[in-house]
Image (cartoon, rainbow, N blue to C red; front, side, top):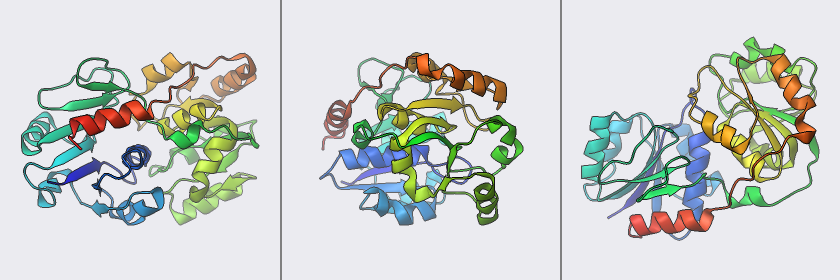
Length: 288
């Protein structure tokens, strides 16, 4: 009986779920678990994120071609419809689903990890790696990370968002070479994809459209400002309001500048360090 972790990744959805999956797998140190990625490129570099076993699969419905009936799985994706999810709950002996939706509900024969729901068989946590709770010197006054993907070039179309600002740029994993070169010319200082951890932890203020990056920067003692992308779901809106993370809509430069002008007096709510609770929940409900 094997244990799997399926995560939806790709050049149109970024790596937020992948980063969260790696956090959970690293947390389960000593557990033999295989990461299944919907992107073969990511599967090939997963070892650089502390994941020992990873396999790329082209579509979510092909999971049974790798797994067997009675295996165990953690499932982090919105790809599956209700019928497919119900089939998965019957196919796997233990099924844990990761959800970001405020209106979600736990179904029979599953366990849930959610930042919103708080009930039996649900782990009510925000998943953040322990390393981001280590306070380091904030050597970057202002940084900007749009996300690991920008297939439709929304950043290029909305550069006015950053008018009057001079942030350090953190490049994303899925940027095309010509797009990346163009961005490097636009920003005085930039950091490569591989510098992600250092930039997130060292930024005093982080402007980002990545929910996971915002949470990690907040945990590290930074002051994140979240940009709501047109092509991203609004699932994190209520969570960020609860944590008092400022949100910029429609790439409004004036709104962003006003937020930054008042940020010195702005009070954020601390994100909880919950690794032990999360690890215990997963191990108990996967019978590890």
